[in-house]
Length: 139
Image 1: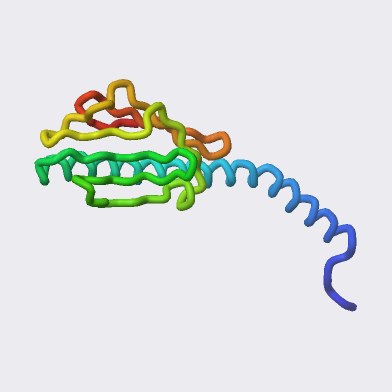
Image 2: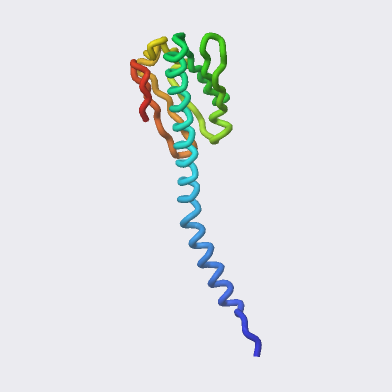
């Protein structure tokens, strides 16, 4: 006598696997989207902090430039580029903002930051970054 599975047992097992996959895959993709958005928001917040601290340390204006089309964020101080990040390409997110740049004064106060918001989105997951008049970042 040979031991093994008959056709009915194999079909039932495959049906159960399909049901479990149909329930878990949408949740897994949403989980991955939230991880990517959170990573992008953390990286963008670090770039704001870099610009602010560079302005204070160098005693000069620092500008954070945002290209929403390509998802590139640049930090510049007195013509020197300190950081370039391709956030959209790295995390697969889209960026929407109400301003194209923010400039930090030598004392760390942000010019043009009043009511600044940046929304980072991937599929159904989104997070918003707010910058205060003083240049502080929160999300």
